[in-house]
Length: 178
Ligand code: AR6
Image 1 (tube, rainbow, N blue to C red):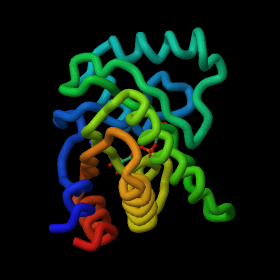
Image 2 (cartoon, rainbow, N blue to C red; image 1 turned 45 degrees about the vertical axis):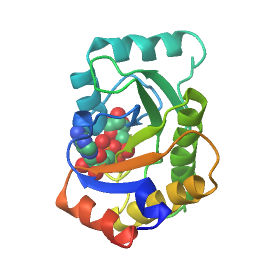
Image 3 (cartoon, rainbow, N blue to C red; image 1 turned 120 degrees about the horizontal axis):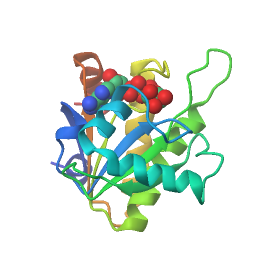
Image 4 (cartoon, rainbow, N blue to C red; image 1 turned 60 degrees about the horizontal axis):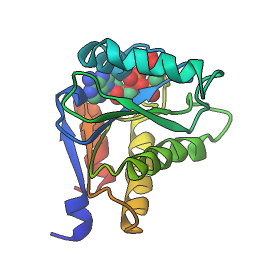
C-alpha cells in the first residue's frame, strides 16, 4: 500500500455517522442551513451549529460566505470536534466553475490545518442540489485533495470521502483508481 492510499479512503455511508476531527458540510453562502447533507448535519448536530453560524453572520461574515470558501464551527452533538462549512459552486453548463469547486476543497483543508485537525470527512460537494455531474465532481474532489495532501504540509493525516449513494461511491472509487 502506498502512502497516498493510506491518506484517502472512499466509503459509502452517512457522513453524520463519522467519528473524525472535522466533518465538512456542503453548505450555501447563507450558512443558515438547507437540505441535503447540510440539513442532515444540522439535524444530527443540534442547535449549537446554527447558533454558531448565526454568530458568524452577525460578526465576521455579515454577507455570508463566498463560494469556494470555508469556515469552521462547533460540531454540536456530532462525533467530531468541528464542522467545516464549505460552499461549492452551482454547476453551470456554460461556464467552467472547476476552480471554485477546487477552492471549496482547498479552503476546507486549509481551515482543517489551522484547527490542527488530523482526520477529516468530506461529502461530494456540489454533486447534489447544486447539480454537478457526479463523475466530474468525484475527479475534481479526489485530485484536489490528493494534491494538497501529497504536498505534506499541515496536520491532516487522513481524509474520508463519505458517499451517500452507490452512484457517488462508484464514481469516487473510479476517480481514486480503486
Ligand atoms: N451523508 C453524506 N452525503 C450526503 C448526505 C449524508 N447524510 N446527505 C446527502 N448527501 P447536497 P450540494 C450527498 O445537495 O450539491 C443544501 O441545501 C448527496 O447525495 O447536500 O453542494 C445546501 O444548503 C450528494 O451526493 O450539496 C446548499 O443550498 C452530496 O451529498 C446546497 O444544498 C451533496 O449534495 C448545496 O448543494
